[in-house]
Every structure is written in structure tokens, then in C-alpha cells.
Amino acid sequence: MKITSNYPVLTLCALAVLSLGLSTQALAKTQINALFMTQAAYSESDIRAMTADFTQQHPDIDVNLEFVPYEALHDKIVAARGAGTNGYDVVLFDAIWPAEFTKFGLLQDVSARINPEDSKKIFSGAMSTVTYQDKVWGLPWILDTKYLYYNKAMLTKAGITTPPQTWQQVEQQSEILKQKGIVKYPLVWSWSQAEALVCDYTTLVAAYKGQFFEQGKLNFTNPGAMKAVNYMKETLDKGLTNPNSREYLEEDVRKVFSNGDAAFALNWTYMYNMANDPKQSKVAGDVGIVPAPGSADGAVSAVNGSMGLGIAKASQHPDQAWQYISYITSQPVQDKYSRLSLPIWKSSYDDPKVQQGQEPLIAAAKQSLNVMLSRPAIPAYSQLSNILQQNLQQVLQNQATPDAAMQAATKGAERLR
Image: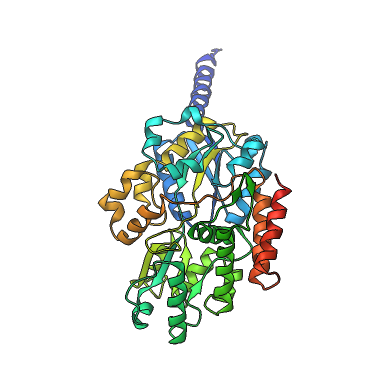
């Protein structure tokens, strides 16, 4: 009887198992979770395309993307606090949240990760978005403000040869357009009881040289702030502003303007190329854009609507998260996707490829991005915003006078300090 040894077979099996284990380890990926918003600035398809390019260059990192409406973004970040492996690694945050997020420890301090030479190449307004108490909490990604859009064909039909240079001229030209029956409601805004309303209000406060603080205390009854809210109410009372503006967000404004139902609109950067796209706009080719005007000829007004990308405090993969953030905020990537959101990099604005097809937008941006007014940077900003939204809506709905509403807003703000 011949005895056959199993040793060679067992050895081969063991080697195969060992080899499989090593291969599995080699193919193992680190998954990071990233939270973005669904409206304004970069489109979801743009973000997915950026991410696909990133993962192709970093095959060891897998990025799980989640998109929510802007209105849900803040609460999603707060709710995920301390979630560890089930939470977010990368989060998109608004310029007004770092004070609150710092107080409650929601973001990682990335000051040591920032290259000082790179930060000098970025607009100071963009860097201020991610800076609080002399620490940096992320990288700016969306550098944005609101511009005044106008329908060139409507203005020409009304005999208006130049776009308005002041908010008073916006009102005067709107009256002409309405009187001539060219458009029922020349003006459309995003005045729903949401952050969009505060952004429009802030733009007008900037225009009328108002301020949010007096002697270190929040105050919304100073002359400039009152002129802003009075202007809003006056355009409604005169039938110049579409009354549905009180329920509109930015996308509603874009759709109304793109449908040819408004002559003027205040909106973010992303609307320019979308309103000029004949596939989704009836007014493509007739879209004009200028900086939001001031209260005097030659002056401009702007709100800081920028946003940054940060690493969540509970992230288990901060290095991979930073790699991803660094990639999608880099100049080559931002230049490539500059049709819906303009780059944070100063030199990009002189790049012919970035300028091509959106020269009027770039010209407006060069003026606006240097004068952006920030909304009040306080830890209790979310509560403050709600107070402002409610009181502004009271005025717009004719439920309170501007004086009474803004006095109430000031008193409400005092309780937050």
C-alpha cells in the first residue's frame, strides 16, 4: 500500500489563503462620508464628477456623498456630532456657522494643515469664511455673493438704455416697466422665511451703509438697517415686487426670471449660466448682470454668501478627509467647474478659460467680492437668524410696522448675548 503525503496540497492551500488575505488588505479602501447641499453653487452632477476624478487618483479612498437642502445642512451637521464611524468626515458649512461650531466643538482645527503661501493666493473674503478666533476651520470652497440680474430685452423695450446704478433706480425702472405693461411684477426676491431672506436683507443693509452692531451690541434699528427693510416693504406696497417672493427661495427666483416673468432678480452666481442656457431658460441671451447696487452712483453692495469645507470633529479619517477637501478646493478643479461657482483663487479671474462666456459675471465679481458684508458672527447665529426671519416676514406680510418689527428683533437679539 502506497502512502501519499498531503503536505504539498496543504501548503498550496495555505499559501493561497495567505495570498488572498494580502490581496484583500491591498484592495481595502478607507470610506469617508461627505455632506453637501442640493441647491445653488456647484450642481450635484459637478460634485459627483469631481469626486470620481478624486477617487480615480486615490483608489484607496472611497467617498460616500450625501446631499441635503441648504435648510437641512446645519441641523444635519449638529445631529451627527460625536457619531464616529457613522457620522460625517467632510462637511459643507456656511460663513455664519464657525462661531457656533467652535463653541460646541463640531469642527477640527486645521490651521496647521494650511499652507500660508496658498492662503495668500485666495481672496481674503473667502478665507474669512473659514476663520474664527484666529483659527482656521476648513478651506473655502464656494466664494459667493448676490448680484443684480436684469432682462436686457425688457429694459430695451421700455426705452431704458442702461441698467440701474442704485436701488432707487431699480425702483424707478421697475415703475416704468410696470406702467408700460411689459411685466406685471418687475422684481423677484427670495424672501421666504429662511436664510435666503436674511441674505437679501443684508445686501440692502450694506447698500444703505447700515450695520449690525452698535457699541458691541446687535442693533437693527440704525438708519441703514431701517432703510433696507423700508425699501423691501415699499416695493411690495407699490406692486413692483412679486408678492410670491415672500414664499420663494433662490431656485424659485431663478425659475421665475428664466421664464421671463421678472425684469430684475437678486441671486447667487450659479444663476448666470443657468439663466443663459436655452435648454432651461426662455430668456437665454438676454440676461444681464451687474453688482448689487449701492445707495449712490458707482457704489456696490454685497453679502458674504461663501461656504467652506471642514473636517467633522468626530471624523475617524481626518487625513483622508483633508486629501479630499484639498483636491476639490484646488485651483485646477475650481477652474474646471467655474460655470456655477467662481473660484476662490485670485489669479483665476484673469484666466481666459474661466472668463470665456461669462465675462460680465467676472467683471461684476471683481467689484462685489471685495465689499461683502458678513452676517453677524455670533455663536447663537441660528437663533438670531430665526428672529430676523420672523420679524422681517411680519413686515412683508403687513403684520407689523418696520419700526416695531426691528425693535422686536433687536430686543430678541439682546437675549442671545
